Image (cartoon, rainbow, N blue to C red; front, side, top):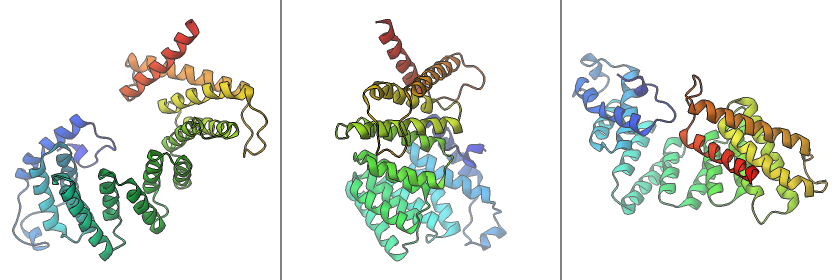
Amino acid sequence: MSTDLVNPPVQLQPEKALHLSQLAPQILKSSPTTSLPYPLSLLTTPESQETWVVYENLVFQCLRTGDDDSAKECLDRLVDRFGEDNERIMALCGMYEEAVAKDDKELEGVLKTYNKAIQADPTNMLLRKRKIALLKSLSRTNDAISSLVELLDASPIDSEAWAELSELYFSQGMYQQAIFSLEEVLLITPNAWTIHARLGEILYIHGQSPSVNDAEILKSLSESMRRFCRSLELCNDYLRGYYGLKLTTKRLLDVLPSAGKQSDADLPPPSTETVHKLHELATRKLAEIVRRSASKEKGWEGFDPAEIIAARELLDRETQKVDR
């Protein structure tokens, strides 16, 4: 049995998910069922915690790859073992109903089921999160934001919920709210370098908005640079961090010469010399990552191919400008 069914990676590639889902019929066939209810079923069929973890992960992968029949059989076994009132089982059943729904009308029916169950038990966080995911799929972003705010009122230390709220705000162009939400994530997980980098990205984009004044542009870009630096301090070879640092420092080098003294800023803007050194560092590290990844050196194979292509294009654009 694949270890990915017991401890699946956070990001499972499509081909790997397909391979795991194709194991479902064999695993189900090799695991006998019993008509006896739990706990009497233990008399004839031994079980382990690993068994149910495998079934749960098979539900995810089978739904992802379109094998609804295998997903339903795995789900039925979980329901028989843990009951329909189990919070985790309720969420899995809801996910299955979402996956097999033929149109928005059926999805609205699933949403009504969620609302009814949440009204009966407001503490069921898994169902509340399924409801938010369903609202997103129905393009009801404002309702999803409202539901997330309600969830965070009840559970203010849920870092994943704060991160999701930030992305929803960002999708609506509400950059200040998105920034605030990610700052809440960092209060809970201060060493999450990916969150520091994402905050740097949103600050950078906010600094490009035509509605902000020169002082706000400088403030956003300066803070963006600091966030990228922090992400790289926590993860030295983080490609996305160097990519963002190069973009931000390049923009700062354009802005700083014409910027006056910013008395309303929390921190003074960085010096041109500092920004220039950081820009050179980001350029050098990006070039090294692209080169070593392309040559498939040991220890440099795990980068996202799309990010490598983007980094190479960024370096090429700057090289072309210098040549001209």
